[in-house]
Image (cartoon, helix red, strand yellow):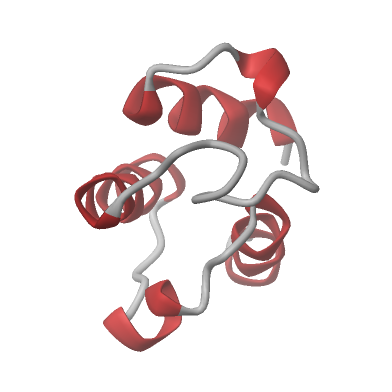
Length: 76
């Protein structure tokens, strides 16, 4: 699994350059995501990585690293 795949998804949803999307980036403070962006991001990640993300789990995502760890733990 490549981090670049996650960067592509976030880049497309938030309209940012891939270089802005690092593991340390905070979704709201650094990337400017709002609640609508977060919902779109979850749907895009589910589609791209073929995972199911519960609402409870999605609410825990505060940083790119938290999303990456979820994907790494749930994608074969």
